[in-house]
Image 1 (tube, rainbow, N blue to C red):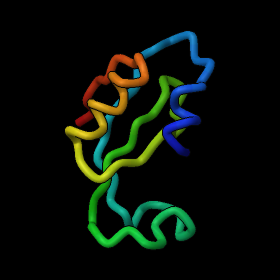
Image 2 (image 1 turned 90 degrees about the vertical axis):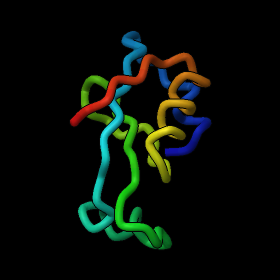
Image 3 (image 1 turned 180 degrees about the vertical axis):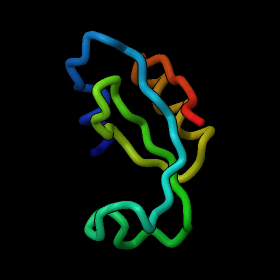
Image 4 (image 1 turned 90 degrees about the horizontal axis):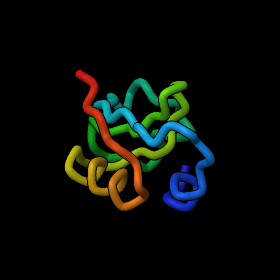
Amino acid sequence: MTKDNLSTSDLNDRTVYVSAVNVADLPEAVAKGISQGRVYSLNSSDGERLALVRDRSLAFVLARQNEFHPVPVH
């Protein structure tokens, strides 16, 4: 997903869930070109991945910039 997809999402629920994801667990096409071992995923309440970012702080900033309420997932 791109930032454009995140901002144009037509979700009624403006909550996104931020979780750490091991790059090794991502599909090969998604993981290609990512050099670090962990990224952060922003997911809708139904589990759809909306974005992947390099660090946790950026995930929260991106969510708020797009008028979402970020919630950490442990």
